[in-house]
Image (cartoon, rainbow, N blue to C red):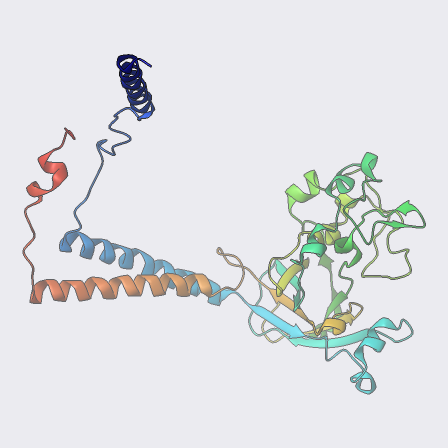
Length: 350
């Protein structure tokens, strides 16, 4: 073998490798080298104190206003699940709630603490009820709810998908477990004057218009061997707002859902008789049921969290601003010359 040819071939191979390596290297750019013009503020003591002080000045008034608005909301909460069981059945609540021969009617008396201006929203509150369980959430058919042509689309509704070989409309565990306690109101002070409850407009308009079809009607619903919750009327699903409200599942085990609205003012001291039909079974899983009457304010219902959060953050920022001010005045530190910073010494990145 010719040594000279071997040497030449090796040198050529090294040159090719070097070319390939150079071609794989990323081209130089100011973007990849993070040398683009940018705002790089210097957090001087005056700047930090000013920001904390500004946040405190803005947040504290917002917190006070939010808290006062929440305190203006009048709310009545009444837990009735344990009170609406006969004294002789307190040790066997499940038998009471599952036996149709027992009278489930219960009378509750509520006193209005302050004047409640219309509209007064009626909610039912459930506790220890996990609507966010994976199997429960998936047990529904959105396609079936929207269109009558998809009534056989029950593949995701197991175990409440079919009865006697026919599709259930609406199918799934969510619809099957529809809340079915009812409430009727009357004013005791006015010789039991009946209060009408408006159940229209309680669901989201987007749900009524786009998620529940006008041509979809209940079929074979609650006709199985195991009855879950409430039954539906013969109207189309887009008009059955109690179902629409229930089908919007809650993220937490304690939640409220809108039942209806009272559209008259209630004066302070008035007593309300509430006739409750205690049909819904929460005793099997140690759940709780509460009836809630509430007014609203510009921030919604009664919720002190928003105001407390603003006050906490604002107060903390104001405290830090004062603390940094005292430290800055008592033991000031000389700020270095910013001209020595790298981006000031080499602004072009070259």
